[in-house]
Image (tube, helix red, strand yellow):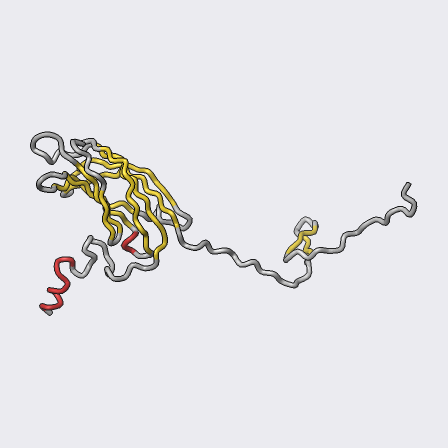
Length: 199
């Protein structure tokens, strides 16, 4: 029992990023998520003197990426930077974790949020451009504007065309007018005979 608890560690068998599934199973690749980290506002200042140097880190599944540091960005940093993530068919890819840090001698967390991807990661692709509220230790820690675009790479399913050798059926509806049902079979076209002496 003690060895089982020791191997599970502090994560209780969960993903080290705080997400739920087994790290060895990702499922098939289904697309690419492009995350544009635009800017943030109303951030608390984690630096005692001067302006803080914020950067943004994002994690999707096992993949983590970060923006460049906005030197002296303070409480209203701007990055306008694109981060690309490969999306797999797994529960780990249903939400994106976004964290803001102050790049100093000691890296301080400014704020973080989880962004649901349920409305973005859809067949055919999806996108949104929203402000997301950041929290740090349960308290409001500003907002960040993130644009999400999902490009679906799954093969498109085509509906099979059924061909039947049935004859054309004509039904009458409630009004007594004929309506056609079933597959269309060409009927011979009635033609008038041409005159013998066209002059």
